[in-house]
Image (cartoon, rainbow, N blue to C red; front, side, top):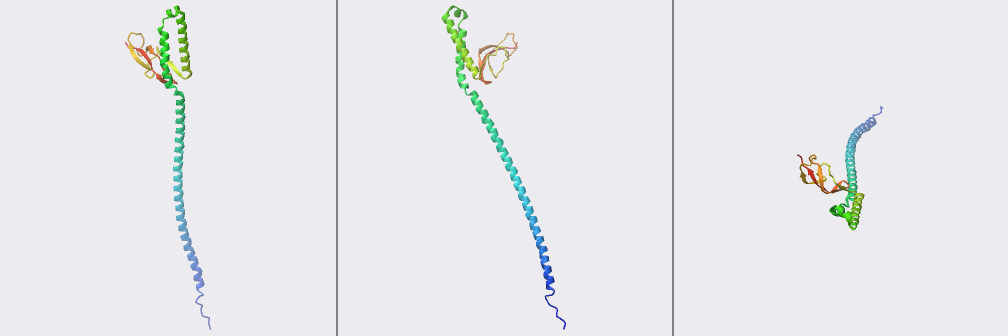
Length: 197
């Protein structure tokens, strides 16, 4: 008797093939998933890099703005320290003018003849010198621009005088001296200017 073929004799061959085919399909599926995951990861990296660049730019701008504010406040603090005395100095300018007027008002002959008047005038002159020295120490400078060219930033023209023999625009007389504080005008000098012929 010949042996009957077993029905499961061919099955092991099929069984061996099916897992292989399933493995290939699984590998292709995993490769597709890996590609999608890789693309998704690259997109995420690009988005994060863009966000990092944006945040870096914002941080640099904030740092620059902070530095500008620091510089501005430092400059304002220095200006405040420099010009804090401006209103006080302005109030003393009239006193300095009055001392000069008092000295100029007394004739030299009267001072020579009267010893008491001479002593008084010496005291007024010494007080004026001390006041002007205190001005100088604190950055207040007197402007007496006779012979200079008229500058509207520092001078105020009160009149023009023709026939002075000076070029037009030259200051020929100072009616009231001006003052500057650290280069900033406190009071313009009131002047008379030569008129062009």
